[in-house]
Length: 76
Image (tube, rainbow, N blue to C red; front, side):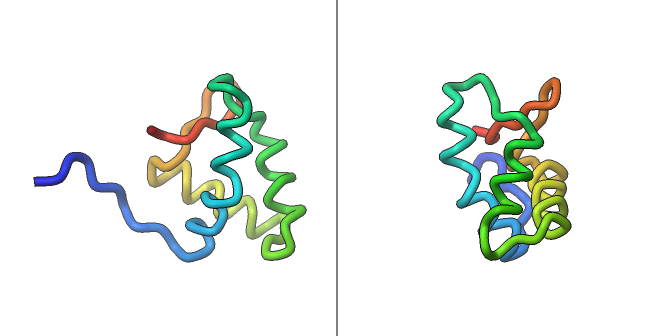
């Protein structure tokens, strides 16, 4: 039996997670400011500001990301 299966993501949220995972990890475990992650996605050709907000919200609500004091982390 598998461990802790996560809720599936939309294609948009999957793409967002692929784009933001490395930049978040590049902050060396200190988290990445949430506004920086939003801007990173909004600057990507596939994302408008609204689409970026929805994708990050979905990632947070489904446990793929978590937020501490305004910084985002990728859930291990």
